[in-house]
Structures are given as C-alpha cells and as structure tokens.
Image 1: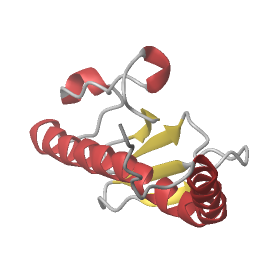
Image 2: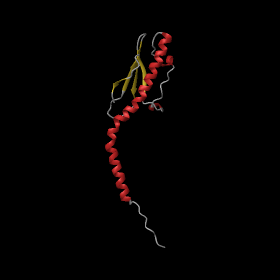
Image 3: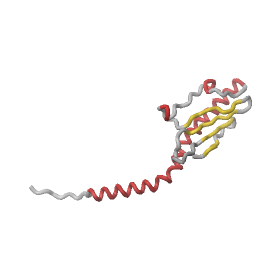
Image 4: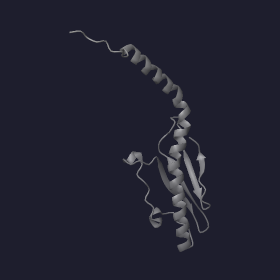
Length: 133
C-alpha cells in the first residue's frame, strides 16, 4: 500500500504563525486599553442618568431630592466583588431641595495604573468624569 502525500503545514510553520499572532496582540493591546476603559465607563453613565431621572421624578412628587436609593426605587447592581457584573459602586453624595449629586466609583482598575475611574452627575443630568482611568 502506498501512502499519498497531502500538502499541509508542518508543526514548525504553525508555531511560527502562532508566535507572530501573539506578538501582534501584545503590540495592539496597549492601543485598545483606552477603548476598553471608555466602553466600561458606559455602565456608569447609563446608571447615573437613570439615577438623575429618578431624582427628578422624586423631586416633582416631594419638592426635594433624596439621599436614599430606597426612596427612589433604585437597586444598585451587584458589583463584580459581590458576584455580579457591575464595575462601579453608586452613591448619592449630596441632596437638598434644589440640587443633588450622585457618584459612580469604579471598583476595578481597568488599565492597571492604580487610578480608579469616577463619574458624577447633578440635577442638570449630564455625567462628568471626575477622575479619568
């Protein structure tokens, strides 16, 4: 019985291709880190806008803002430290009859530089990045 030779790649060729792909990934990863941080910051902006809407509704009914999430019917999502998926911790840091301020503080350092991302929103409803990651 004669074996027919099939054209294929050798193990060395495959390893070389995998090594080149690995090097390209290592070169590209630092470029994508800011994009990853921006994408994860969307969570904070969305939740803060939701809190601002709830605060506005609460003010229309009670003529003041509140410090308590219970009164807003807002349940903060579980963080990754608690077995959830949220990367931010939320809190109302100021609430009076005329204004409020809520904060979203990252519990994960997205780019590993030791700085945690912080966003805030007030009664105007525009999230602002206080500390950039």
